[in-house]
Length: 165
Image (cartoon, rainbow, N blue to C red; front, top):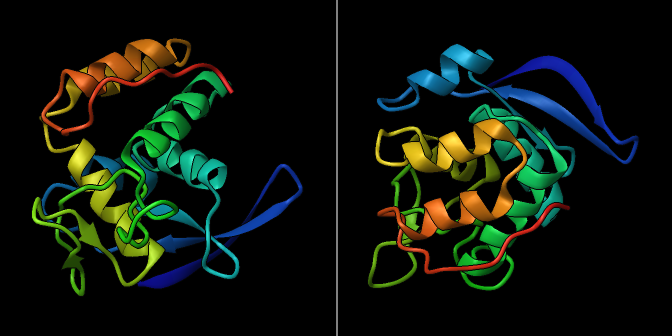
């Protein structure tokens, strides 16, 4: 990984550096869309809100209040990172990355860094199995539709409620 040397300010509160990721199989869509750049907060940590906005930009889908509200509801439904030991994995993906490890019997991964966790989540959602979620996000205005798409997908999350942020 190498820094792109680009500073992004989000809401005047958070400074992010765009970091270039490698392009393993399955990340081609994100790489083509974003030149493989993902925003990594200064200090190396996220809040549920900042991770949601970074994830949306990385996949890439509209960063709207409704999409942010949806991703934060999905984070709560999964419990990753802030509620369980799936370090740097708010949506509890099982996608392996170099240095990751299983934190449960299902194979949910914990990651050595936020970069790896974000890359794994982007790889997962863009692998062809989650078109319903991506279609709901593309509209940017239907958080419950996106939550219903997650519940009916192979991701493994049950039903949950989502609303605009």
